[in-house]
Length: 258
Image (cartoon, rainbow, N blue to C red):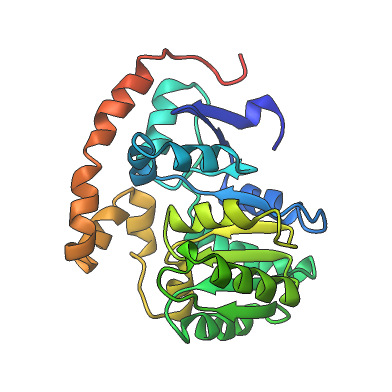
């Protein structure tokens, strides 16, 4: 993953060129290093938000790996570069693939996020799906925890007491990434991975689009239909991505690493 040919530069960041299986192997290779490495999965909404939120941009740039969650990013990379991104890699998919791979690596996981009881249900279902998986802890943080230093310290102490190899945080972007970046130097784990609604997906309290829809690049339409009040304004705002994409294309066409 460190070779220059494995990097696709876009929007002032370096995206890792990887399939889901390759991303999973790269993440599991960090187990045992104890560096609390952050893994992020930028999508179109994140790219738009970073234009006005420079702190978010710096947090994402500081991550060990950036995997593109969004087919528009994949498509753009293929237009700009002869060897673009091979596929979309989502936090939701990584939760399952990394949890499965953690069994062979004897790596433990911690689920931080979702509503009370949801992470516990997700843990039970993941263990049922991947026998031998160690879920060493779950916790649903209260609303506003990221602004409460005392509460955040309690959560850090809870995670450290459980001593997971991999910490999954599902409280939404950019909250999950900013919180992880703020506290990573005090967290004793190997990997921190923001996964958004993936804990709800694992618990079965929320449904993802069918696999065919996911692969088509139109999962956003499924999400809008499932929660229009919350998501329609977000995707309406994401129209700004077209201007950002044109600006990116104006930077030229070349092969990464050349």
